[in-house]
Image 1 (cartoon, helix red, strand yellow):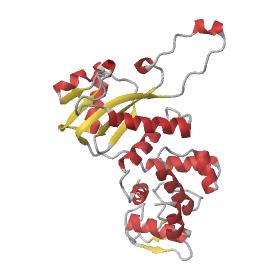
Image 2 (cartoon, rainbow, N blue to C red):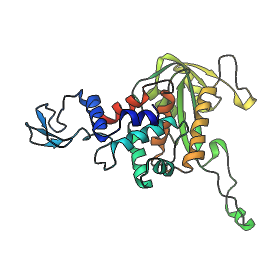
Image 3 (cartoon, rainbow, N blue to C red):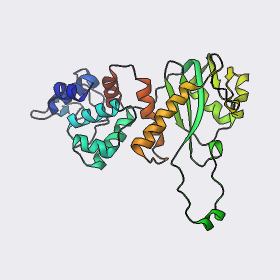
Image 4 (cartoon, rainbow, N blue to C red):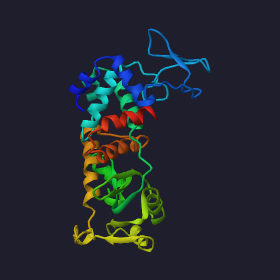
Length: 292
């Protein structure tokens, strides 16, 4: 869905409310406080009165839109812009596009990312697993004397950047999250969370933390240290392609992320990657958002 379709399909607040009620309740209001459907519409408003628990409520209660003062049409436009931005959209850019202040745009983005949280389904088939590191480059040291007080900058697994682990089902979905340690114990815990070991083949690079996986699952290795990137069907190019999208989004759009919210941004990129061929992704996100 694009912004023109948003304007055509949801020209007013009433249309947005009607759509949310259809998605959440199938047009039969259910009280979020007692779970009963014995309610009546309060004339002249979008709220309903529950005859069982005597509370009033709207369809926004318990959704990503709860307590908002921003028109729902702007929310729908924000969702559309975020979904259509392959590498993300900065909160200040979103604020300019929908005419809200930057703090409001940032909160809207974080609420929308709640509806992009990972699904419980397990990956299977040929699965590629890899780790990467995100974070800006250290500032250049201008003072020659200062160089003696700092250890040399390290790259790869010796870096101080934030680690991220990911698994992608070749031709399917990807799952990723922030992870600080990459011992076999930590890697296996992540693999158990995301993969169906009985119906999967694991592809990794030569990192020694992956070596013990051969005891639990069929495991193929591509040796990057020997400049081997593809060996027949063995490669990790799919997960590395996802890393490029994630890093380009962070570098080009968000510029800086805190560790506290990093997983939410990762979820955004995973959600968009997993639904790249889904023509109803807008409806899916709304459904997730009203059932959060």
